[in-house]
Length: 441
Image 1 (cartoon, rainbow, N blue to C red):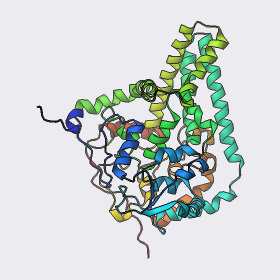
Image 2: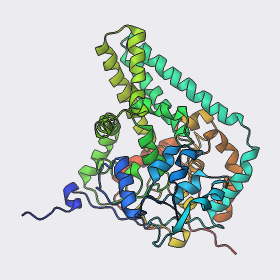
Image 3: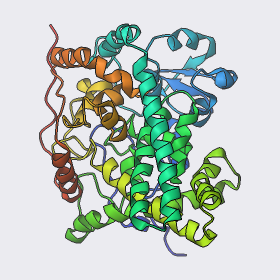
Image 4: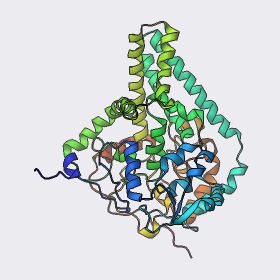
């Protein structure tokens, strides 16, 4: 009998090593699906179907249908450590008061995550200040986000119809761009409690449910680490962590970064459909634009399908280019493999700012922020807050950064595009850890 292959042999890729102390999830290494990632988390956390928050275990089964944020958040996180999600998704302090009703027992093992939430640390201090600020922020900012989202979706559908009616590939590319804007602006609503605007995301053939896992529960909580699905799910096609790379693999990443998202978008849609063998609302929504073009243009179905695929292709391509150059990937931004902070400085909020940057040319315009992943640092710290309120939090945020000596990184859009290409080719870890925090008296 032939010896059993090791997982690293099967994929012929060096297994990443976490320098922040995160354990790689107990699953295959490459092209993880969101369900793979959750399965791995459940195996590693080993919570027997309970939910872990800090060092206590809770049974939230009876609370799922009553959860104000919607049942899906609790259903998909059952059996996992949700400490980071709980802290960032509940800003006002109400949820903590309910937890005692569902307490089961103390945890007997340390958490698999190294990030801390010390009461006097950076994140908890900022969170307390933000909670006090929120009642003073005008409500119209949130309404403005909704209006922008609805206008963009309507514009996308109109452009789909026009592109198909005139059989115009140029109009199809413009429709693809508006599909990207639709996806990007729906991202604001995906992080919030269940709402119909989060389903705008599904027009792209990507799944809002799966994006909540890969983006909100993986990328947002563990950015630029080996737990970040937006890095690990594309390995080895995109090698964003600083590890050993051949010259060919370095620069092939540049090419694959252009073509990867259109391929993965369509493949992922049909893989999910065949795997789950059932129709969800997410599965049906992508075909709305095709139905609109078929019934409103009187074109042959073949032409409608051709334009539909063309628009999805360009929407996916532009989405990938914006998403991978928006905030996280630059050689000066921390990536797992680089020298990390000492363990006593791994405050959750501090790590977020080590792994994220903002663009001065985007910040300040709500439309640009919503459609180009702006106000990224504040969004990572408080993802469930509507982007419309984030601008009002800057004075509090910046003062807290000064108080703790935390660096807020700023790069132009051009610098981040160039930086993302450099990061794909980078194989040498940064030897210097991020800027140390101020010592408290």
